[in-house]
Structures are given as structure tokens and as C-alpha cells.
Length: 505
Image (cartoon, rainbow, N blue to C red; front, side, top):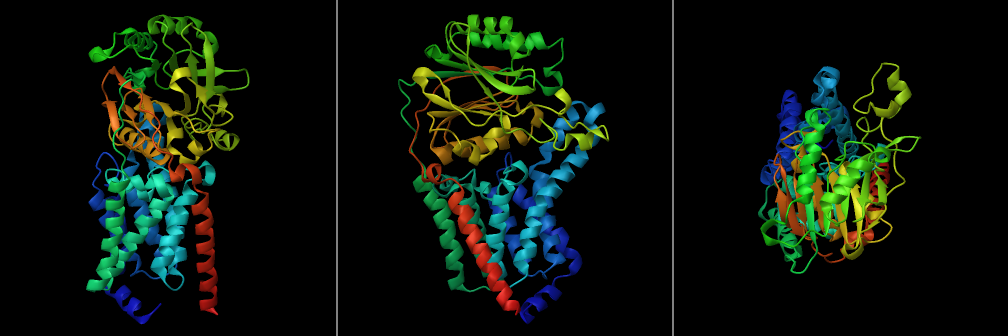
């Protein structure tokens, strides 16, 4: 380590390092919904880069990155305890382990990036590259979990529009570069150095403003009806309440149009909205068809085919027939299936995936459903809307994205709003509208520019009728996907490693 860096390291008491890193992580967490305090989030990101510049290599650097991640993921993903509290007697004991396990596990990606970046010359440059690579890896490794990527701190601002050009991982790289430039300026103040981070922020925010498309003219567009029964998770499968929730959805389906709007052209129920398995649901589906009065309906339903259970979406035509079925393929580990189920069964641990000896079976993958005059839609069931790469795997470009979800699992504070934010980001990335029917909210219609055209707030019971926006522009990211960033980061990280090895010899 250079002498100047050693002096700065000694000037900062060792005991302050981890608390500072944890605090900066909490600041970054305040950028997530529902807080949306992006200036504080960016300050936390800049702060940890500044702290990294004063941190010794090895375990100290890794610990700094891990503590920062713990603060960020611990705050922003605090909703993870909510599913365990639905049946508190059975699974409540798992809640703290779930939060610590998720936050601590995801933080290992960042710890590895900090550890590698500190072991060589130009550590700030290496940190930007390695951290960006770690976020890309987090989106794919062990089925992936790209919730709360660093670049998402810009979601409340026009800068989020950059995902339509460079995608979420490109935006993460640009965000970390800007934070590194600012941290370097703070550590080595000079008027000329301040121009670079200022210019980067202008590019982020000003460029995002220029990239934001205008709202579309929706006159003459088909109308969609989104049903929100608002069944709390601890009540959803109560045998006494199931008929009430089902009838509520039937009543909303049959209701006259809102505010003089035309009859809906499509009716959408949320995830697992039908309380029977598909092969036993003839009576329920007949009731839905009658209430829909000839309008096609999409319903969330579970099904069993003799080999396994599936979390599915069924398309009902206007005549009472099941026209198409889509099975969720990207399942939630420990929630919808148990990884290494045989191992966990030795300790009688089934997580939240207790059905069918370990949960649901996975469907074959992304597929489109044909909705006639409305065009083809790409269905996304709950968690699947979190994954940009799953949208890219669609057989062809759809007319819109269609998400059904049950966010009652996530409680009433941060989880549902973060889920909505990520659905909005998928729309911007692809230049495609997304409609989402959520059990407890937030149900919404979002256009391809990310404008929320209509929404039913969290915790409200009802439905919304809204015009379906047309597809917007074909974005650069919708053509490229993540492959360019994957190849670029592999080459750049490999080059930094090779240069680092030469420095040591």
C-alpha cells in the first residue's frame, strides 16, 4: 500500500470501519421504495467508495464490503421476514434467519468484489469493475436474485431511463463510476477534478430526461380490467373466507364499466386467485365466464398433472373454455421449491414450500399467450418480473407484459412497492407496457416509457378499468440484453487481474 494510503488508514480508527460501512449501506437502502430518498442513497454509495479508498487490502476490505451490503440488504429487503410471519407458530422462528441469511449471503458478492479490488493498483477503478461484475453475477448465480441492483437507486428519477439503452447492469456500472469519481474528488479536492463527477451526474439525470418518452395517445385502445380482491395472506386460504374472496372477484368481474368507459376487452385476476386446482375448477370457471359476459379472462390458478403442482395462469375464452395455460418457470427458492430438499428433510425443514414434498414444479420457460385483438402477451407470475433476462428469453417481442402477483406475502410496507418499481423498470427496458394484477396491490397499468397510467393503491379492494397502452419504441437494451456487459466485464476484469499479477512480480 502507498505511504499516503497507509497514513490515511492509520488516521481512521479501526473500530469505526464496520459501523461506518454499515451506516453507508443503510443510506443506500433508503433509496429503495417506499423511501425513494435517492440523494441519500447516492451519498451512501459515494461514502463507501471513499471509505474503501482508506481501507487496507485483504480481510479488512472484504469485511468493509460485507458490512456495507449487510446494511443495504438488511434495510431494503426487510420485507423478507413477512412470509415467515403468516403462520407464525409454524415458521415464525425462521424469520430472523431468513433476513440474516439473505442479507448476509447477498453481501458476500460485494465482499468478494471489495477484497479483489483492494489487492492491486488503481483500486477505485478495480472496485467499479469488480462490483459491477458482482452485481451481474448476483443476477444469475444459483438461479439469480437481481432484486435491488445498485443502479435501481435512480428509479424515482429520469436517470432510470438509461436502462432502455444500457440495461440495469450498464446503469450500475455508470452509477458506480460516478460515485468513484466523486469519492476521488472528495479525497483529493481540486476544482478541475470536480468537473468529472458533475458531468457524470448531468449525463445520468439530464440524459435520462431526454430519453424519457412522452405519454402516448390512448384513445381507441382496448380496455383492461384488473381485479384486486385484497385478501390478506393469513386469511387467503381460510375455508370460511375463501368463498367471500372468490365472490368479491366475481362481483368485480361482472361490475359495469367505470366512469363511462367501454366494456373491458380483457379481465385479469391475480396470482392463485381461483381457490381450486384447475382440474377441479369447472364450476368456478363457469362462474367467472358468466360474470365476464363474453369477455376473455385471465386467472391465476394452481394445477396438478399427476407429476407435480404448478403455479399457473389460465386464459378463459368468452365461451367457458380454457384456451391457454402458462406455468411459472422461475420459482422462488425456499418459497416455491426447496433446493436440496432431501438434505433439509433430514431436519424436517420444508421452508414455505410445504406442498407436494417441496413445492411447485417449474414450467418449461417463457412463452407468449395470444389474446387476439390485444396482441400477444408475455406472462410473468410474481417473482418472474424481477428478472430482465427472463423477458429477453421470450420467443418474440410481445405487444405487452402481463404480470399477475400475490404481494400479500410481502406485507404492507416496502416489498410490494419495490416489486412495482421493478415491474416499471422492465417496461422501460423493453419499451413495452406492463399490466399487473396484484392480490393486495399495487395493481397498475404502466406504459413503455414507465409512466404509471392507472393504479389501485396497496391495501384497497376493487378494480380498475384502463386503456392498454400500445408498444413503445424498440429499445437498444431489448435487442442486446446483458451479453455485451457480460463480455465487457469479463475482458476488463481479466485485464485488471493480469496487470495486477505483473505488478506483484
